[in-house]
Image (cartoon, rainbow, N blue to C red; front, side):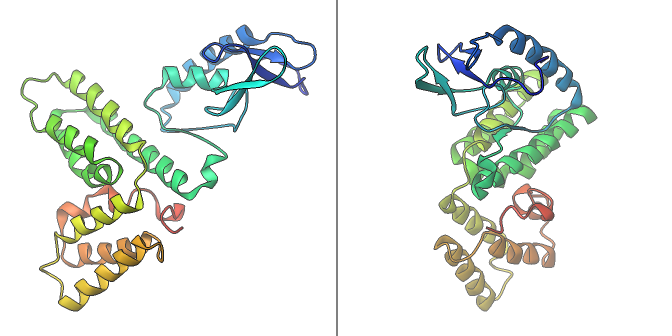
Amino acid sequence: CGLSVPRESMRLVGDKDNPKLITNKTKIDYTDQMISFAKKRVKELKKEGLSGFVFKSRSPSSGFRDVKIYDEDGMPIYKGSGLFARVFMEENPLIPVEDEGRLKDPELRENFFERVFIYHRWQMLDRAGMTKKALVEFHSRIKIILLAHSPAHYKELGKLVSNLKDVQLQELKALYIKKLMEGLRLKATRNKNVNVLYHIMGYFKRLISSEEKTELIELIERYKKEELPLIVPITLINHYVRKFNIDYLKEQVYLNPAPFEFRLRNY
């Protein structure tokens, strides 16, 4: 935003909802300069088609949460967002965002990248030309992963796409993606994953032998007890999906939410 390199350290001061960006020693107010830069930069970033954004931890400009806000006496009294992060999120409420420090947590990292890749799929579909049929097909592919994150949103969006006759496409798109990203922000807990794994098993439980069924149940239960990572039962499930050529499950994002190299579910 035009500051020197190096520069004096700064912090947020004052009101929680409208803090000022002030240098620590000289008390220079850079609030307007930062916000002016942020609005310009965010406008430029909108042209990039971003599918996710990682912010700088605890930065008074680029921290998206838990940034200390001080009173006039230098005492931390609130926590909020940095000025650039605040502008970015206001202008891009759907784009998945995360704090670099929080990405060290494997569950938060998994949640973030699942959202990034699902939102990217949505963007690609929208650029190709969204139709009601395409939206229903998209929903069909993300149903199970949504169930793992939020059964409530799973039901709500299921009702939404089952009754499309009286809904305009633009209104439908806006409501659908808002609710979808809202639901995906909720973590897919171990218990919710277990329910989903048994739900998926129901599609082929009559096709596998009793020994194979016992093996899969054992892996799911060991995952439930935190003895195995999620990737173990999912790997076996993917094997049966390919073996029995179950088209509906082959399309499910839940079974392959991100490139394998990310190793999201190996922890």
